[in-house]
Image 1: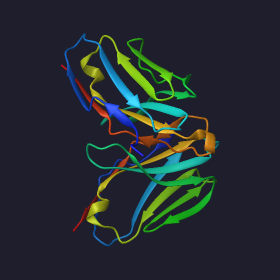
Image 2: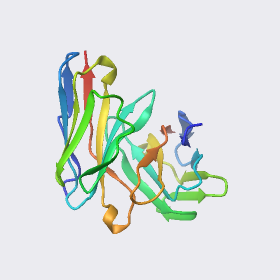
Image 3: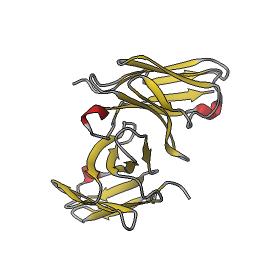
Length: 115
Length: 111
């Protein structure tokens, strides 16, 4: 099993530019989570999907952030326009909730730097 | 009060010692409890998974859940330098709900 795959691994962009982060969950998993990790705030949940449907986006910081899951094997997190305070590591995780398990498996993350 | 509280450390212990890591939480409805280990510049990896109260053991690792006290623990026996990492507790209300994480405890095992 390839695990959760995120791209790019690193992204450096200028303030005001659009950033798109990508995630391929583990095959067969029906839940997907986007988290943001910083030293100050730890691992924060931004949004999660069950069966491709957004369930809770209360963690999305503001309208500059949007996430989509067009099918079971792909999700994107977009920031437009980006700001320096968006600099963080963004993780995608997936879970096989339909089997009754609750734990999530993480990708390696995208380290975003906005200058 | 945050939903999940975890001492950030760092916690330094000598090799071979028993390590105790803890989290407290405020929502008594949490049912699923997890511990993740995160090495520097890597994603969190699942270490232990428990449902409701009780103990679970896996090799050198033991997870305990005390729902009456809203307190969970992870014990590491015979600690090794390779155990040096950040340990995050996590919990969920049910299998369809979001997973909330503590901020993590940085652990250093001294050779």
